[in-house]
Length: 274
Image (cartoon, rainbow, N blue to C red; front, side):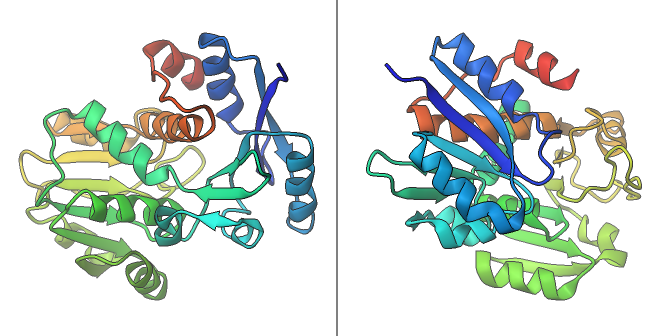
């Protein structure tokens, strides 16, 4: 039986944690396979994809800067990816056609459900900080999960309006300066910006006006406990970290390629967070 091959494509891509994650699962489930990184510049994207198809890859993950440009190379795109405006996972089917999906929002929801088992999205008010790629996937998932209202806090009103137009649902847009006002009575706060990541500015926000039973989630996973999550934990809020979201979105991709959902174990969390 031929070896199963998958990859992550991007530029740069050497920093990606995806090979650690997927190779761990392949070993755990005794799949004869290899997951690798493929550095691909924008002008070589089509060539790189054609090469993976001809070499019999079962699929690949897509990261910056190809998450939107890859749309043009796909035969079919999921509604989730269309709403998110980005593809992060491609399945190469047996007939060589390409199916694109986005598991970011799925990973976010699965992580919140695992980290905060009592939290129910239905009828809740969520606040999402940021209007970039991560935010799009998360907002599409929140809408699908039945949130009553999504308050989108963004620096660029144009990007925020474009997100609302693409995703659809009950949104209210807040300017960045009014971010604390957006938190009033909210049940969920999500940081979908790079603020708080190592090497970036911290996120300056007071959590005092959140609902007392609220949950706080951060898409940032370096450091593992951001200033936001530490602040939330100290105030008694339920928290969900960015590493869990990363692992669950990877698990969603793995299922698309191999047909089953792998375990997100404590051992895997330790390996990836080193």
